Length: 83
Image 1 (cartoon, rainbow, N blue to C red):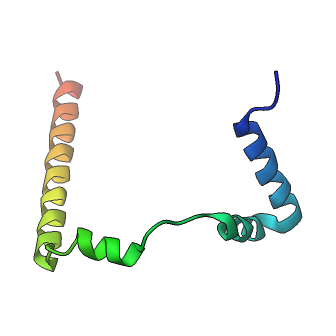
Image 2: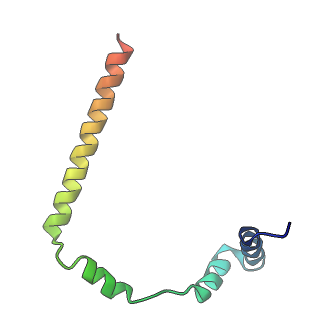
């Protein structure tokens, strides 16, 4: 059986790193990385109706949920430990 595309990709990356180092290999790959569209326009469209308050609220809710889960796990492990 022949070499797979994944193996060829790995071998190519290793050859680039050997010759150029990680930084040089990464820069080389970026020369051929094809991007599509306009990133800035896409982000503006995606978040056009989102306010700072929305973001802060979402972060606060996420922190509350994580705290509740942590409290539950700590309480549960305490109960299990001392049963």
